[in-house]
Length: 283
Picture 1 (cartoon, rainbow, N blue to C red):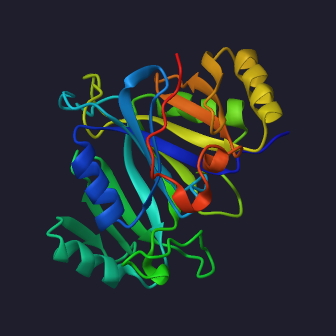
Picture 2: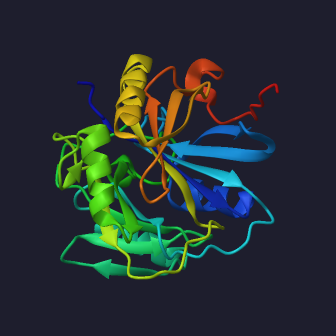
C-alpha cells in the first residue's frame, strides 16, 4: 500500500500581499518560491513560501483576496499550524519576535512559541526533538541556518465529530491514532473536539486546505479508489502544474489534498531564480 510521506503544503487566505510577503520572508525567513495565480480564479494571486528548494513539507501558500472578510472559527476548522525550529533555537526566536514587536506566548515545557500572522492565522514554533532534522537552508538570509524554520510538523483540526474524522484518516489513508503522517518524522494531524453548534466561516487567516505528500500519480489513483470504496466525497483529481492533486472532503467537510512530490517548482524557473517572476496560466 502506498504511504503518505508527510505534509506537502498548507493553503490559507490573506488580505494583504505586502504584509504577507514581509511577514513570511523578512520576519519568518522563508523563501518566496513561487508567485502565481489561483488556477480556478486567475485574478487571484497565489504565493508559495518554503525552504530554498521549495521542498514539500516546508510550503505555506496563500491566496490573496484584498476584500476578504473576517473568519469565524467555530466548527469545523483547521487551527494552529506548528512549524519545527532547530533544537536550541527557542531563545533566538523569542528575541527576534520581540525585535519586530510580534506578540507571542511561550510554553517552556513544550519548548514552543505561539503567535499569529498578520491575518490571524495561528502559528506555533516548536523545537525539534531531532538534532539532525534539517532542510534546504536559505542562503543570504539574515537568519542563520541553525535557526531557520525546518518544516510543518503539526496541524490542528477542530471538529465536533472527532470519532468520524479519526475513522476517515484510518480508512482512507491507513493512519493510526495518534495520527503521525510518517513513523520516522514528527509530522502529525491533531484532532481537537469543538463544543459549539455555530458553523465556521472562511475569511482572512483561514486555512482553505491542507495537503499531504505522496510519491507518484499512481499513488493518487490508489487513494482515489480507496476514497470511493469508503464513500468519501471526491472533489477532483487535477494537474496543478507543479504537482498532481487529489482533493477529498472529510466527514466534517474539510478539504484534504494529496499532492505528488514532483515535478516541483523548477519546472518553469531555475532554482536560483525561484519566486522572481509572476507565473500565469492560460484558461
